[in-house]
Image (tube, rainbow, N blue to C red; front, side, top):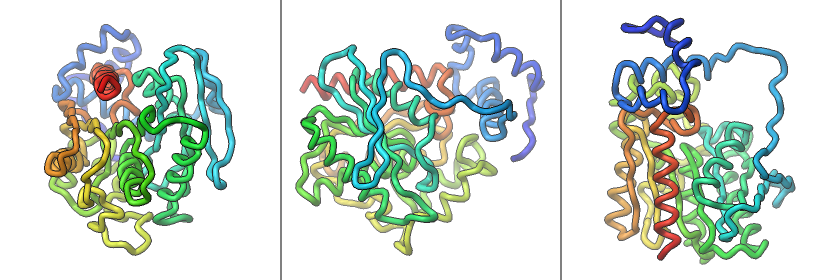
Length: 322
């Protein structure tokens, strides 16, 4: 990773400042494109990608009333989380990201519960789908279909389900919805796609934002996967099976698409919105200025993340009211 260059603040001063900030103080980063905010993001991501090892990391345990149940669905490791707060039957199905090369981890578990509270859901399902390099397309999709069918078998009505996916998980959520349409299985109430990877061929922002995106851009761990596509199994990148941007999107459920203006996959979101409009599918596109890829996951403290969860809640309330 390239060395961090701070023009207005030294690294030590910036780190000391960030440690002292409370939620209100984070508003100094409300301008996502400012040098201050971009320096903060760079510092945070350097620490994220190169953490200082401090003993054994504690295992994730659900808190605040959440109860976890672990089981397998057609050999797919699956986790179900429940709480008793909202009592409205809403269910979240999380499709985690990671370029189709990473498995489910504690960051995604925590994120799923945060998204569930934004949804006002008392039930969450997440699953550790098969991924490259060992398992290639369509293994992850098959696992997603199995888990979705399990949720329906549990007695959940599809109208109460929101499928949320980020990055490659956004791709998986979309291709799952397309597969459900093909199989004649009822669609969920809606999809929430954060920084979705909708096209595996090269789009404009894959080049234009390569130096701006401090999460997925140049010299970041997952950047090479955008061009390599280990999961593809010999299928051409522009094939709709891998790139749902080019699929027939008619008949899909309402969608919320969230992206950062500095993110590598910015075009994936903008072009998906355009394709959904042409297919007469209701969708909302939210663009957060200066934000990188998957920012609510890796930068939970920023005001833009708070805004993104508020937008999630508003979208959910809107589609559940219809």
